[in-house]
Length: 418
Image (cartoon, rainbow, N blue to C red):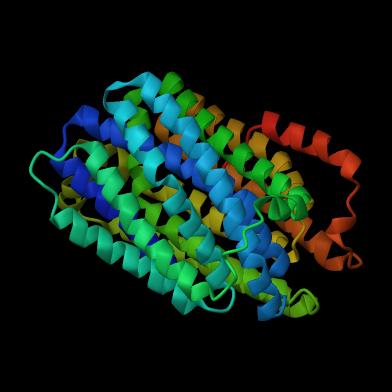
């Protein structure tokens, strides 16, 4: 979990320093580049890192080491293709936004490969995952402190990416794997069924999350949207913790597939801990003095303050929901994960918007809580079904049904598992 915190902090440091160094429009261009980065990061994780974590966490270390070259090759290939696409887009768009995208294109392979190395290390060498993330964080801080006067957004993005590249180089050395023999297509072919389902899951979540934000602004106005976003920023550290828990729990859960009782206990305890943590954070939010809230959130604090309880309930429900999500990922069944996402997507999208129609920001937050409670039931029902069913190899899934499943996923809407 510490490595996730270090990884997130490197992004936060850059965002804060860019915000203090450039104007509003330039910071908007930086935000656009970071959104593109996060989307591409999720796509590459779905096709590379997550299949590795779900399928190979229980493998012997030597067997996993033999897969690293193929994994790294796939990450490089996907990131280079993505770089060409966004670099071309940025060049055509021009302006500050275009320059930011072109700068991201230059360094994208460096940062995306680094993230996949974290998946390799976190299974049984978490200290190395922490080491490469901490190195990135330290390199970013040092480089940013040396930023020349008048540095633009492109400079910050390139330096951030080069710091990530240093971390990547060290990570490749630490893998002790034969990375001189890269076979990207072999990895993508081997994990095609799992990868496409995880990709469908991710795109479903992203599509619905963005749709909910856009629709909220249209329904209730930008002031309501600002209040909701401020409350989400307050609860943002919980999302970082959820991401760290995912990397810690799924490998352990995968190794416990043969002992369903212990796996069930692990997932129940994890869900309870996440829900309890969300409750404690909600208590902090409710008791936060207005002076402190205003200092951090400015004019949006009065609106965010009244959302502390309803959004806190949503986060508590999200912690419980994450338990079922982690359980299914630990079982290594991407089809069950995709099915659960598709079943839970309508409620998580429509209930918050119905709440916004009836009660603006508070209604939206209560609707989000209701949607997550419904989703928690769906994810846990699916997880318990896998626990009590006869062991089966998800490799045996019929290839003929995959295009239909993935097509539905790409067309549907959903929200993030957190």
